[in-house]
Image (tube, rainbow, N blue to C red; front, side, top):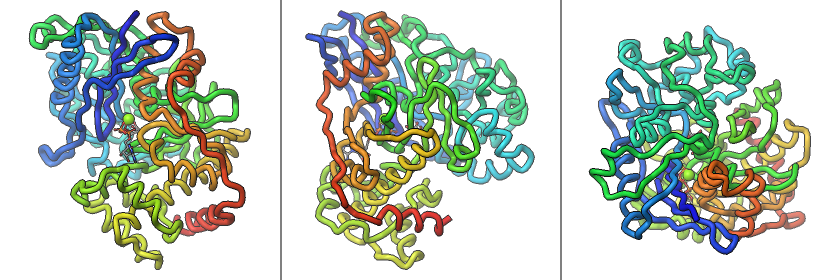
Length: 484
Ligand SMILES: Nc1ncnc2c1ncn2[C@@H]1O[C@H](COP(=O)(O)OP(=O)(O)OP(=O)(O)O)[C@@H](O)[C@H]1O
Ligand SMILES: C[C@H](O)[C@H](O)[C@@H](O)C(=O)CO
Ligand SMILES: [Mg+2]
């Protein structure tokens, strides 16, 4: 019986989860959890990448301490960010975080010479100012000259552990530099940002064997024999694999720091409607496409929780929100002002004042405003998604930490008129493990993996309550249209 370790590192937290199949069910155990986050370094927001390597090895030590001497391991993280590696294989500096202000005006500048339509036709990827394309566009040319390899975060972590460098396609697609038709890095976009073809390691599909963790680490840390498999290294790609959706009329909502709402397609959809609504075609595992929209997500409540000095847990904030009246304030949660403001509570209150609405003040009122408007945005996005892909969506599978918020699950079901199936909250780690199990030949494919997930975890269903909040979504859609 093989043991699988998912290293799942999100923007807010990381974890090592041990998975194995027993009595026909996937059994998970979180063996190590650690905080993640960026810190100021040389005038930029940077990730502490060496700390992440140490946390992975510390987690493996805990596994060894349980008497487990051999594991498979897959690493998934957030998207778009990268490490610049010199000819000696050493990082030039800590990776700069995607919320750093250096790319605030990069899209405007780059697309003044390269039209957005041209880029979207090639890549089908959404315009987010932090995409790798725009980060590289802002890089100092002298720094790029010293760069031998550009490694995406999970690929870099795999490289440090095994010595082998690859670029896994699900995360590579988030760069907005992969050409949909060629299946390769697009030469025109590469030259636009002064990057040469061989500066990215070769592309591999999710599920590719990367190699064994190097002896040097086994001498410094008491860890099991570990074979690293390049899983679906973009955390959202792993989350989609780990989402127990079936048939043709389901959509996913990976609800964590970001809310990623979309559908799994077999061919990309990069037409005019998708372009206008800024939907993206991130590559999925096994030749699929994750046609989705980035929604600001629980980042907003994460910042509010910190600004309240963490005196409330997320569960307590959700409970406080339950007690409040609904829909007292409309907010365009995807407004860029919420991407990384100095003070999120202040930003939310200023927004309410500027739009002549009720100003939420208490923790419960603020949390309610956030959950109400995320739910409204989800409902609107489900309708837009269904229109663009041309078929109805009857079920929305909500996974990730946000699936614990019953208030949002019910509001989204009511407002969207869809059945919400909530869970598993650790879908990302589960999907990471499913890909490893497919590579190891322990399960046949993703569909078999999703049936195993449905049989193994407690999923909660939220049916839309008839006539609940009639007209509210239409009012919100009008508010959004006027807010643009
Ligand atoms: N019991 C709970 N009640 C309310 N909210 C919760 C609960 N548990 C988790 N959350 C929400 O889930 C979020 C974390 O989700 P998740 O663990 O999927 O994110 P992550 O993996 O750490 O980060 P990323 O989204 O970058 O991958 C928290 O910020 C919080 O808002
Ligand atoms: C920038 C984000 O990481 C990315 O858009 C999102 O897909 C993600 O990775 C959420 O964890
Ligand atoms: Mg996550």
